[in-house]
Amino acid sequence: MEQKELIGSAVDTIVAVATPPGTGGIAVVRLSGPDALSIADSVWRGKTLSEVTSHTAHLGEILSEDGSPIDNAVATVFRGPRSFTGEDTVEFSLHGSRWIQRATVARLTAAGARAATAGEFTRRAFLNKRLDLAQAEAVADLIAAESKAAHRLAMTQMSGSFSRKLESLRERLVELASLLELELDFSEEEVEFADRSRLLSLIQEVLDQIERLASTYRAGKAFKEGVPVAIAGRPNAGKSTLLNRLLGEERAIVSDIPGTTRDVIEDTREINGILFRFFDTAGLRDTDDTVERMGIDRAIGAIDRAAIVLWTIDATDAAAIDAELEKVRARKEANPDRTYIALLNKSDLAETEIEDTDSQDVIRISAKSGAGCDRLETMLGKAATREHDPEQELIVTNERHLAAMRDGVEALHRVKDGLATGLPTDLVAQDLREATRHLGAITGAITTPTLLATIFSRFCIGK
Image (cartoon, rainbow, N blue to C red; front, side):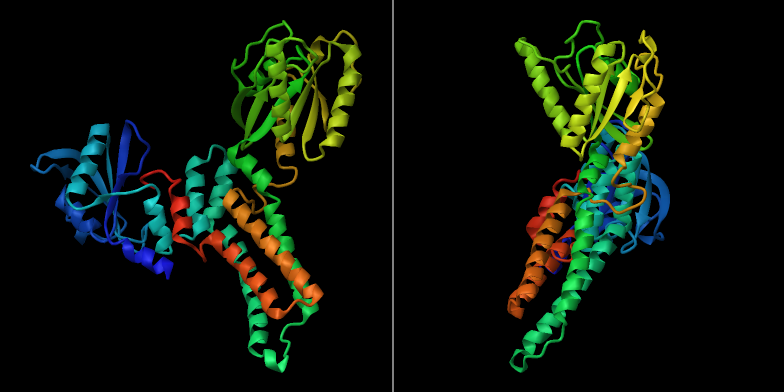
C-alpha cells in the first residue's frame, strides 16, 4: 500500500544536471516524468521529440524564453518504461559551461518541470520496478568506485545476483512460514504439516548461508573503501621510504633522524585492482617526548584498525632482527584476523649475510631501490583476498544490509530454539515472519517511506 502511494505521488516531471558540478567538455541535463517530452519540445528547436522513437539522439538547440539559443545540444529520448526511471526521459548533452547548465535547468523548470531532489531519479527507478532496493544502492556504489574490486562488487550487485540470492533465501523462509500458518488454521485438529526435524534442518541451512554472507562484510567494506594497511616498526626502519615507494611519489618526509614521523600519514593506491589505504606511522619506542608519544599512540590506533600490518625491520641492525621477528610472531598469535608481513628492509645495505628468510610472511626488501617490492605487492593482493575474493563470490558491502542480516539471524535462532523446545506454533511463526521481513527489507520487497527517504537522500542530485 505504501509503495503504491509513493508511485502515485510521482506525477510531476523532474529535472537536474546529471554530470558532476563544474566546467567540463560536456554536461548532461536529465528530464524525467509524464510531461518530459512535451516540456522538452517547448524549449527545443529541431525534430519534434514527442514524435521520435525511443533510444534515439537528435541535434538541435535549447532556446531561451525570447527564442534566442542557449546552446547547441543533443537530445536523447528514452520512452518509458524502457528508460532508467521507467518514465519518459530526455537527456540533453550540452557544452559544459556552468552558465549553460544553470540556464538550461532554469528554462526547463520555467516550462513546467521541478528541480529533482537527491537520488530522485534512482528512487523512481525503484518505485517503477526498474531496480530493486539493493540494486538502487549499488548505483551509488558504482559512482563512488575507486578501484576495479569496488567496481566489480557494485556491478555484481547492480546485475541482481546479490538480490536473487537473498530473494531465494527469503522465499524458502516464506514457504516454511506458510506451513506453520497452515497448522494454525487447523490448530483444533492438532494437525502437523511440517516435520519439526526437517524444519530445523532447513532453518539451519538458511542460517548458514546468511551468516556466510554476513561474514564477508569486513572484506567488502575494505574493498569498497580501501584495505587499511599500517606500516609499522621501530624508528628509522625505513617506513616513510617504503610509503613513498608504494605510492610512487614523495608523500612522506624521509630523514636519518629517528622519530621524524610524528603523526599518521595516509594515502591510497590501487594495486592489482584492489584499493589499499596505507598508513605511515610513528616509530614505536619508549620516549619521554610528549609530541612523539602522541604520535606513537596514533600509530598503535592505526595498527589496531589495519587489516594488514607491514612490520618494517632495519636489516642493517643485525642484533635487533630476531627480537623484532619475535614481536611479529607474538602479534600474529594475539590477532589471528590481522595479516602481519615482516619486511627486512635495507637488506642491500646489510654488512652481514642475512639468512634466507623469504617466506609467506617474512621477506627481504629495499624500499630505497625497490628490490623485493614487486613481491610485496603480490603478497598484499593475496592477503587482501585471503578470506573473500571479489572476483569469485557475493560479498556484502552495505552496512544496512549487514544490520538486516544480523536481525534476521537473531530471529532465525529464536525459531530454532522454539522448534527445539516445543514452543507454540504461533510464536515460532511470528519469529519466522520477522526473519522474512528483515531479508525483504534489503531488496525492497518490504519498505517504508522513512527507509526510502534515508537511502535516497545519500545520493547526489541528478542520479
